[in-house]
Length: 281
Ligand code: AMP
Image (cartoon, rainbow, N blue to C red; front, side, top):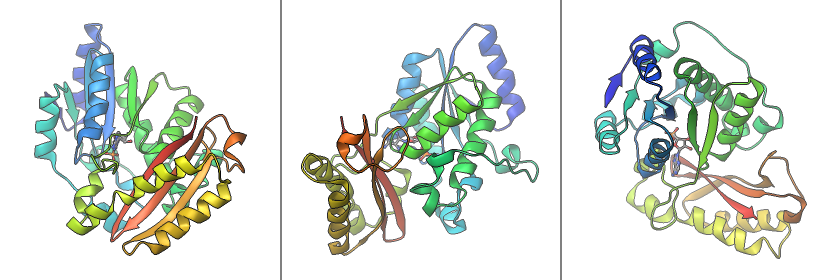
């Protein structure tokens, strides 16, 4: 695997690859890689001649400085995983390489960034869009791979690409889970043993919500989930939203939309976890 730290070196190598007529799949990550990330690499590998993974803990998408500081960084182990998956290239720039001046691009995603993560992490999606746009401009991949685990982010990236008419296919990839249902996440390593045991409660609640969604209204489901988390000794519910999966607009009944998703964010000790489940179809 070729490893690049500068844009210049990376671009040179991409030019060579393009000269050979090869297609390129791009998987952006913040590192601390797990099987969920690797599923994106495998998919990109199946669909392209070469795969480029980026590892960059993007400071502009963190509204909480402490969260940025404690974000897990495991570059050596990450490289080993990427090599074992036959990833072709890794781009792991320093912050100065990606942000060389005081710049601030302001994006407008309409309703997509007026709810859920946007309310709890002000500026988060503007930071995500800034770095995704930079990477796509530098790399110009044929396709970029994003996880449904970050459901709102996936819609925002698709909106960004459509709005700016960027020439790249965005491929969504299903959420990989641990055996007990917990969505794989780089943040899971920050959980204590006790917290980790309890964490499966998030997916259990989502699954139960899907089961109950045929017979209860959305308000009833939200109240029910609220009570479930109030009773839980370690978890605090930040939001539990049942919304249209394409627009993220609120709906009254599950039958009001073609596709309905339930999105959740929970604080477990000091660790913030998000997950989602498609309720319909
Ligand atoms: P992150 O490193 O957390 O920014 O994630 C990088 C990419 O991996 C994003 O597109 C995520 O949605 C995706 N991802 C993270 N966790 C999972 C998972 N458990 N299953 C599938 N994709 C994931």
